[in-house]
Amino acid sequence: MYFLGLGLILLLLKFLELGPVATWSWWVVLAPFGLAVAWWTWADWSGYTKRREMEKMEQRKRERIERSKEALGMTPRRRR
Picture 1 (cartoon, rainbow, N blue to C red):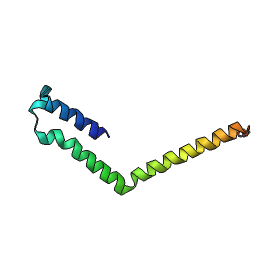
Picture 2: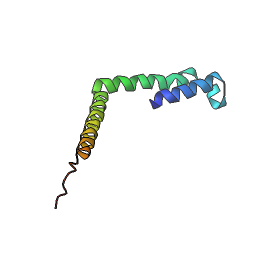
Picture 3: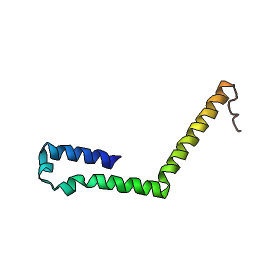
Picture 4: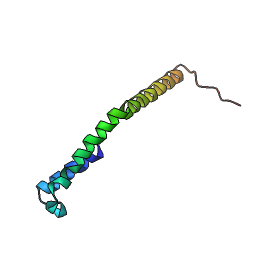
């Protein structure tokens, strides 16, 4: 996501011919988009995206169970 944001900013600066980016090659300006595609490809291939999704689901599940226990008055006992 950071690569995409950087690419959009550089593209805007190049298009508006602002700052030093105006003199840069188009290859340099468009490189972050290629890096974003490479990152997303790797993330999907390696299972990184799926693991992050599963971690979020597990965290939501734990929070939901904890809220239910508190609503029922079943707070966990303290260990001595």
